[in-house]
Length: 208
Image 1 (cartoon, one colour):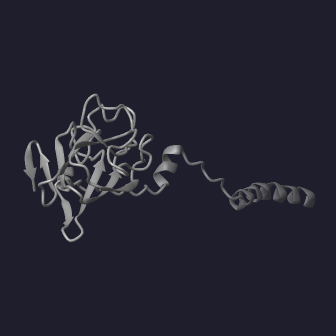
Image 2: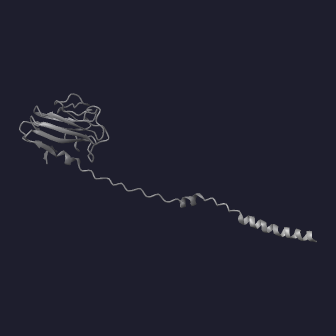
Image 3: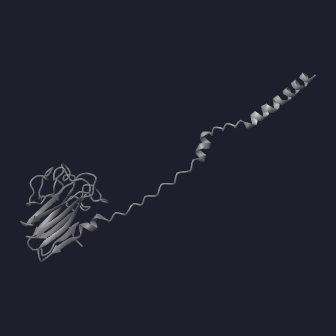
């Protein structure tokens, strides 16, 4: 009788023990779906907007000439491949002789050349006659050429040409990189015996 009572008590206690073990066992976490994981990830901040500065017309530089009458020194900036022009093969926005820089005979010309184009360019003073050479050679005026006259200077590079405006005559400032001058990359330089100061002409009219 005593043994039967103990057996019944043990059987009754078995379900309770199982429930207790189940309650004590930690539940496994459910695996998040890709969509849920994406929703839980903080959204990336939007990229900041890029503001491009407006480029001033190259013609504004073309018509600006510095002049020191005491030393008879002409200062001029020549931009190769100026932006916002009709062709990348230009000087200060002009091509095919559309611009003429006139300087007094005997003056010292200090011409700063800057290449703003992604294509290499250079500058050299040559005779104003046809046929125009395909590439840089001997300049018509002594020291009137930039470095890398044939290979061209890279974008952002600059060089200073310093030469004496002599003798009287008309010349061409052209790009010495093969084919560039023939593609229209040239303007004129006039050395005048009567001019008392430098000037710039575009389209047959005096600029500035």
